[in-house]
Image 1 (tube, rainbow, N blue to C red):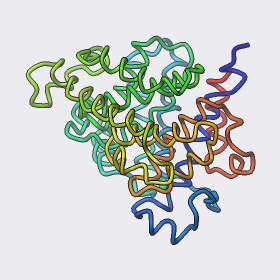
Image 2 (tube, one colour):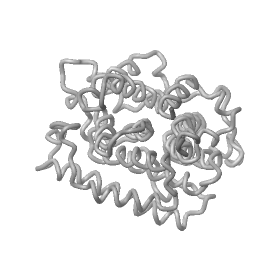
Image 3 (tube, rainbow, N blue to C red):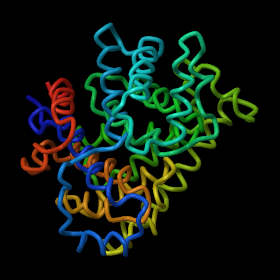
Image 4 (cartoon, rainbow, N blue to C red):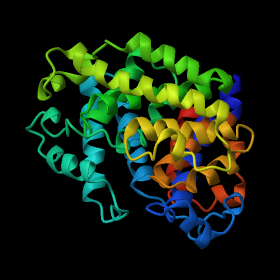
Length: 339
C-alpha cells in the first residue's frame, strides 16, 4: 500500500477544492477591509451555512465525470476524452443549478459546444485566459496511471474547450502537474523550482494530438510560437511567486504579491502562495485565500486542492467536510482515484 493511497490524496484535494470554493463564494468581489468588516478576523472565518459552492466545483465535477466515462472506454486519448467532457460541460451549462455567477468565457464556449457537428476548436475562446481554465483541472492531477504526455495533453485540452489562450493552457498544465507532485508526496519547499523546470522543458511543445489546429485561430506564425507565449507568462508569474514565498507577510493580502487571480496564471500563483504560506495549517491557508481582494473563490479552491493533495483527506475537519454541497459526488470521485 502506498502513502498516496493511505492519505487519500484525491478525496483530500476534491473536498479541499470545494471547501475553498464555499469559503470564498461570499467574499468574492469584495476588498479585504470589506471582508473583515463583514466576517471578522480572517483567521477565524467559519464555513458558511449552507456550504454552497460555485461553478468552480460544478465544472470540476463535470470534468471528473467526463474523464471517468472516457477512461471506462479505454486508454485516455484526445478523441476519447473530448466527447464525454464536452457533453458534461454542456450539461452543466444547461443545468438549472448553473446559477452561481459563472464566467462569461465558459458560457459563450459551452453555448457553442452544444453543436456536435462543429469541431470544439470553433467554440474555444482564443483570447481568453480566465481562471476558469485551471480552477477545474485538479482531477487530471489526481487520476493514477496517466503518462506525463497524457496528463499534459488532457490538462491543456480541457482548458482549451473553453479558454483557448496559450497562457490558459500552460497554467492548467502547471496546475495539474502541481497537484500530481503534491499527491505523490513531493516536498512543497521545492515545488516552485520543479514547476519552473517543467515550464522550461515544455516551453516550445505544442500538443498537436490533443489540440489539433487550435493555434491557427490566433495570430501566431507557428504552433511553437503560440504555446511559448503562454509558458513565458507562467514563468514570469512563477518568478514573482518564488520571491513572495520568501518575503510576503501572511498578514498581507496575497493578491498584492501574485495578482488577483481573475486570469489563469495569477490564480495558480496566488492559490499556491496561500498554500505555501501555511503548509501545516490547511484551514488557515483556505481562510487566507478567501480573504483576498481578487477572485477569492477560485484562489481558495486551488489552495484547497493543493493542500488536500499534499496532506490528504485528514486535512479537513469532518464537521466541514460533511456539510459541503455535492459531498457525495466529490467523495465518489475521490474514492475512485484513491482506490
